[in-house]
Length: 587
Ligand code: MSP
Image (cartoon, rainbow, N blue to C red):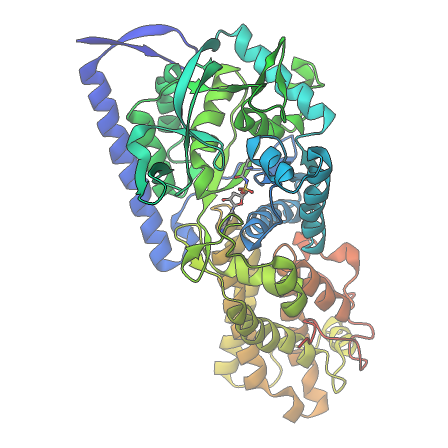
């Protein structure tokens, strides 16, 4: 039997159902192989078993994005997590010597925002300005290195949305039709009957209908809409997934698998506009003011806007930073990013993002932190109590890519004390003690004082193993980062840090005759310097405080200096008293 299929260039060709079944089987097998590799590397916490999926240096900046945040309420810790993760990817790429660009911002159109503003009787734009500013402040407070803070109310964004819409019309993917269905204002989406729950209220005699997935109420909507021919994109999407299984187009694989299953089960055309009579707070359909563009088409386009899509000509855009290298998204918005977004881009014949990294959720007392349920952790309050980098460290140290995690402020303080104060700050403070002199240790080393000194063989073996590990730290951390795993990176760094502390405990330089101290102080200083250089993308403030304390010049903090003896110019004044702590002492 023959069925009709679209391939990526949209040339229609007949395919045998047996071919389809074989392709499906092959995809399943490859997906299983990818998953088993993932479990192996997860079990050993060893990125060496995984391939490097991030492209080597390219002739364009490394482009990372966070989702843009709804402005219907203030930011919470979950939002900060998306920002910190994306920021760490950006900082890491820059550390590796590549230009990088981080985009974050706010998603300001839609019924949800219009209703939130109406509720408190504020003009919608003023409401957006105020809440958007809260997200902007959060990014600044958490030292997020965003290169642009986009707002969907920005003028160049409207141009980009219109350009994408017109392109999709030209290519024949948009048509007008009637749409009826259950719509959730809160989730800004229609739900099929199979995903709904009904609840009869005895007292009012009214049956309310809710989404199974989000628990949000839905209402029946019947209207004229424009549609995107999503059903035509099933085969091109499956072809795309198939060709990008190994290189983690969607990561982790559990999320990729859910997406593939959902596309295999079939796609219906997507309603992509709403009557302006129902809501006006959005971008009108070009040439038809009676319709407003669906908020998700509007929102997703922000990633193109910032690459200059609305303003640049086709050939100029080809030379821009497009496509995105990493989209960081939460698991609740995968359908939009992993199905709709690639479908729009394929239809518009635009290059696709390289990776979509999906994280799970931070919970509070076992339930998803969300502004609509009111159970949220205020990131500002925790940063004031624990310090910005202690919060960044806690968020990154917990791998919530695979499963949800409970956020607990007490635990932030515990980890801060155990890892940042006792292990990191303590090592730096001991090395910068006023009883030693790093400057002298370096000059002795330059004059050829032997690194080993007069120590037992066991100690020397430990020392040389530790130096080898410090010299491989960048490569080991890079392997984790190239597999979207900052948690693995931090455990790699803390393994070396643990060794460095053991080394100091063993060496007890404070008991050694002063003529013998220099080789040990030199090794301690080198450990602090290398570890701090590698820590910069993760805890930028603590790392730079440590490097300042060690008097490492700002020009010598890049990747090539993260090796033993790569910098012999630091240490001046490092052992003077009162040079401050690496981790602020709060509380
Ligand atoms: N506006 C859309 C995204 C459009 S992107 C083109 C949106 N906004 S949101 O404000 O609701 O969520 C933004 C991001 O925050 C999402 O990635 C979401 O998963 C994340 N988080 C919201 N609550 C979260 C937790 N409790 N934990 C972790 N992240 C969570 O969706």
